[in-house]
Length: 158
Image (cartoon, rainbow, N blue to C red; front, side):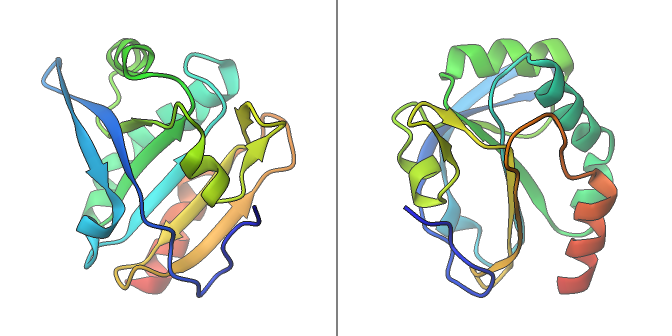
């Protein structure tokens, strides 16, 4: 499946996820369409606890308040289960949701699957109107889009 383009309505989804607040793991389902009216950064990443993903998600955590000041949420999405996400989020003190796309349906809908089993490191910024306002899909590797890049793109749609 091909990736949605800038200007397309973002494919809606509901996924189970976990967010750690004050050291406590809260599990629930997250539905993209319920966030209409607010920008959402969808950060697809290959694996919990891998060096590149840890660096990426920790860099977003470091700027979490700035993202919130811009009215945006960050959702990390990978193919691991909620148990893996909870351990990773607690270990790295991540304060944003990590969503479990175990079947790969959302990864496929966004065209960021890798060999049918993995996930390409990719970012989609979904504007308050539910449309893709910016995207970056990595080929392969450890390089990720910086928090500064995401902040700049969010400021353009604010």
